[in-house]
Image 1: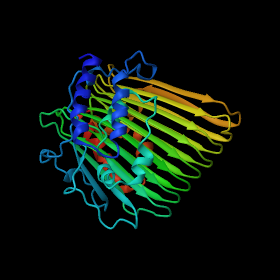
Image 2: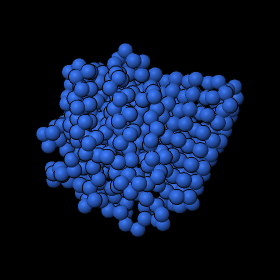
Image 3: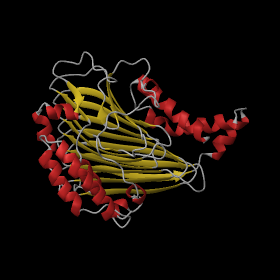
Image 4: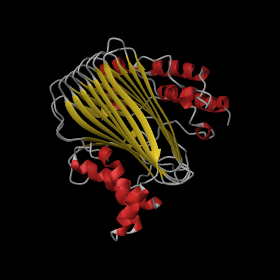
Amino acid sequence: MKNNNIKEWYLENFQHFTKANIDELSELRTNAAKMFEVSEFPTKKNEEWKYTNISPILNHEFVPSPNANKDVTKLSLDKNIISNLEVHLLVFVNGIFNKVLSKLNNLESDVVVDSFYSQLKSKNELIRKYTINLDENLNSFALLNHTFTYDGFFIHIPKNVTVEKPIHIININVDDNLKPLVQPRNLIIAEENTEANIIYEFVGTNGDEYFTNVITDIYVKDNSRVNFIKLQNESNTAYHIDKTDIHQTGSSVFNHFSLAFGSKINRNDINAKLDGENIELHLYGLYLGNEDQHIDHHTFINHAQPNCVSNELYKGILDDKSKGVFSGKILVDQIAQKTNAFQSNKSVLLSNEASIDAKPQLEIYADDVKCSHGATVGKLDEQAYFYIRSRGVSAEAARSMLIRAFIDDVVNEIKIEQIKEKVNHLIFEHLRREEF
């Protein structure tokens, strides 16, 4: 299907959608639809998309109208619950908040953990303050999300509050023969001197076909510390596009994990601005690819103020005909002296047909900085493999041990043991299933 035809499909759906949803964001949606109409979906001729062909996404007429009446019995919620860990639980089905499945108990005073739509209907002024403006440089996928902005999660942590229990958000996506377009619009605001742990999980049943197109804005203000773990384990025939924008101010610490295991095409754009002194930003990524999966991570970090630290560590394991992409850019403004910025992407290819494209970049305008970047690709260490085998270890166990050693420095950065156990379980369930 040509770009213009698929745009016409979505714009026609928008006419019905906007009549049914008149609220504080109606003007924003209309403006986004106008911008979407004249935009073009990216092609491999676009530098930022040269390694990722999104035409399979454009060949489907995904249905954007919200519908929460989905049967979730085909995917048990229980198996996605983190064992032995009390959490505040938000559950979404095809992008729509499900109050029955969610459990929000004993939140700290004035902390808001809710659905985006609920807060929009309550006329929460923060929704309008943080979402009303449209960036003229948004690509077609981001504009598509804004055009149909409806639900997602909303988290607001007031000053001087620590959220003791982790916040676990689960998106259950189900085809139901409708090919849904699932478009979460998420907002996190951690005010000054706050702490929180957030797990954002996407799940789906293999064989289901749908398109997740998500935007998450994260504000981490002075002296706050937030850990954010995104766990993407969607259907192997689904598509997933993610845009995450991180805004940090003075002396804040933000840890972001992107764990990408599912979907046929997965694109993650992670953009961060360090707009204050003494900020720490840590981006960790782990991607597992098999069959013909395509997993793409693009990161952009803007060091806008002095005395800040950023650290990126991404690792990939690719088998069969799967393909990985890592493009990471660090921009250091002239004012940002005493910057420390480090970036590393390492990949292991388990077949001759798997591949990785890596593009690390530094753009530095300050002269008193410490910056480094690098990308490596290779096979599992054969000498180590044969040594382990010589000790009487089976071939499968030897390979698992080497893979575990390769990924441990990413997984071990997850400090809550129950979450780490869940991630390890999913990793090795994935590896066993694909017989890596």
